[in-house]
Amino acid sequence: MKIHEYQAKGLLKEYGIPTTEGGVATSAEEAAAIAKKLGGKVVVKAQIHAGGRGKGGGVKVVDGPAEAKAAAEGMLGKPLITIQTGPEGQVVSKVLVEGAVGIASELYLGMVIDRATEKVAFMASTEGGVEIEKVAEETPEKILKEFADPGMGLMPYQARKLAYGLGLEGKTASAAASFIMKLYTLFVEKDCSLAEINPLIITHDGGVMALDAKLNFDDNALYRHPELVELRDLSEEEPSEIEASEYGMSYIKLDGQVGCMVNGAGLAMATMDIIKLAGGEPANFLDVGGAASEESVTNAFNIILSDENVKAVLVNIFGGIVRCDIVAQGVIAAAKNIDLQVPVVVRLEGTNAEEGLKLIEESGLQFETAKGLKMAAEKAVAAAGSGGEVRNEHPCKQRYPDRGAGHHGAGRHLPHEAVCGVWFKCRGRRNPRQGRPGHGRHPRLQHGCEGRRRAESQRGSHLRAARLLRRRHSRGG
Image (cartoon, rainbow, N blue to C red; front, top):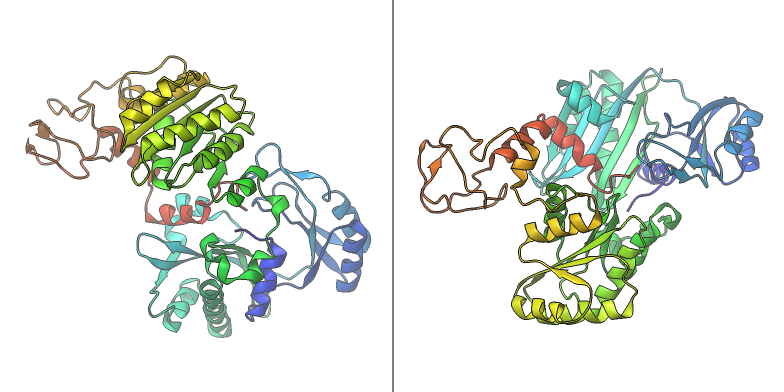
């Protein structure tokens, strides 16, 4: 769950973390009144759940109430377009008016859950006010990292280490270390998933202050924090995502044309990947849950089809706890209850999969069945018109047409049944890593395109750590 900057700063103050003074306004007159109370120069900031507000014109430094009123009038009720909102932008309903602060230097401080180490990861940099992803890509040596063990918590020496690493000395270093310790306490006690202070400023008198603040919270822990639930701004969220959460489904709207209905988050992610490999773009992430009942499938269809960009739907269900024939009955009943105007491709796997597919095929409805995820994705992409003809060659051949089937090197052909990153039988072919015939099943033997893809996308541990800050909802701010 995301909250606005002014709400995040309110939480910072509760924990004794220094930040700017100001107030939130919903009208230009309120903004002028706050500016008059603060006196002198003020900063008017649009409050939306998206980053890049400054470049988009959502942050204005003005002098006096009259200019503050004019700046607020230029923002309130109008869409603000930033790098994270998309071309449609987000409508501004609130502005934060703060007193201007003298800045000696700008730093960066971020905290996130690092799943690899199972610890809270800290990132700090002297490059404050700049997107941390850009710093990680261009100058990764300027990013400092520290990890807090969940059993012991953040130790004071670790906070001092970060402060000294940022080049701070004396009382400023002590103030920064105190700031970091308090922010960690907030992070843990409020079950945050992300905390980002950018910029963290050093004032002319050596003080440390949060000039901007972003806090995200773990949705699964909100039952412990009713005070945080009250901070949720539904107007900033996608209506279909809100509706899905009411049904107990996980849904995230994307920009593609192939709607996805899947049971299980892991399978949903894999389905999106295979759609991409087939040349299409997923329109959403949707996990209907383990049951995939008639009611949940009906609700899922309605949510998916509310997106006008959806040109085809891929139903990908694994029958583990629930039988595929039961799922098929739910899909058929749901399809009869709604007006389906787009092609639907159904792939069932697991318990009673054959019986389920037979029910689908004999239903008389305009369903296309597929055996195997690759075939299902290709059919869905072709039906959506985003990939042209169905592609029967291996995805590696599509991505690298100049390479032959054995593009791992002369005489080192791997079976094209191998899907990147998945176990497969070597079938007596030469193991390209060991230079000798392979036997049985080799874990994590990567297909060539996977190695290339990793080389292209992973530019070092700093970049991977920075990208964790943007993992939730690519439009997050």
